[in-house]
Length: 437
Image (cartoon, rainbow, N blue to C red; front, side, top):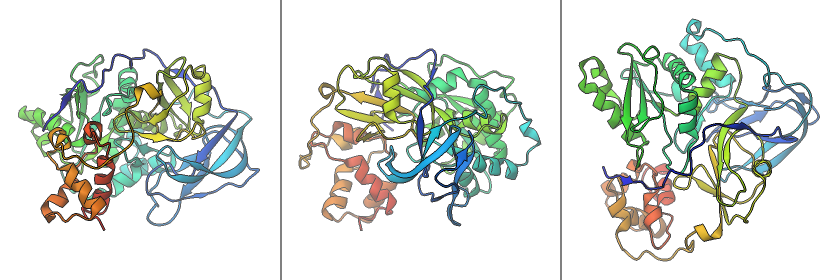
């Protein structure tokens, strides 16, 4: 597999501390926080809600294991509105005006002993506390992922302790500043998943360590990956890193790690710790706010439902009007149209880019330069897969099926001089099973 060194310079990303975002005057909580899950609002306009109260639950048999949605502030539901989501979809949402006493914020929470809970109880808690696994670009309810896993044996939990997008810093920040809580959250998931082992993949140059007391025995293992290269945090990269530890006899079982295992990121593990140990549902998250358009940048602890506009105000506003707003990283993220989009559980970073930092966005016909093939880590043929989807070009079945291997690293997009949406098109092929119909 090929990788690109220092794809994006990380020098400007580092933050030593985080700050709590201002409490919003009102929040917009969408009834859609994970892909493919339908929700039903359990509240009405005019109802008063508490911080952490369930306001929407999964609807239907297919979505039965979806994560519940909570109000992140106390207050009154002003209206049910339609809003745009950070992933480009539309959703209905509850607009809640903040008023009244907080249930969790500013109050000390008692710690619970999670060891007394059975796996089924833990899974139900993941659902009721709103845990969404934000590993990768497709957030999903953790309860759904565990219950739908078909593995009978070789069940492992793998935690990536850094960001897979080199322009982001959220997961790295959480992993380094809340290491013990992340590890404990991962252990909780491992029990719920009934895993044979638990692996933590740390960056090669790591500024934090995991205490031996937390990972003693042959149940847990640590591995390293070179996060100065891209891609480094994708599933196949993590599997390769963990399998290297199996050369040590006591960790031989980790050679059975496979793509059907459960992969987590640090922020998901931290949310699990808060939910199970402290009893706090997912009402806030860390978001990396950056970009040369802003007067200041930082790592913010943000209430779910806060609009991006309010975060910009806390940063002091713009010194330059942004030409593009990118959510979840310059490499793997996506653009959003305006500042009135709310922060959901899937948002990890927001970057504001001026026009001088953007390249030409106009797409033209493929010039057959071959750059996408040369840079693809999986040795695919992105240009032909794009042609198959956009022009009904007939490819041999085995070549068409290679779309399933794509890890959505978006390197093909970054080098294409014709500015073709290669990565997004291959994703559509993956969803149709390599069929352009």
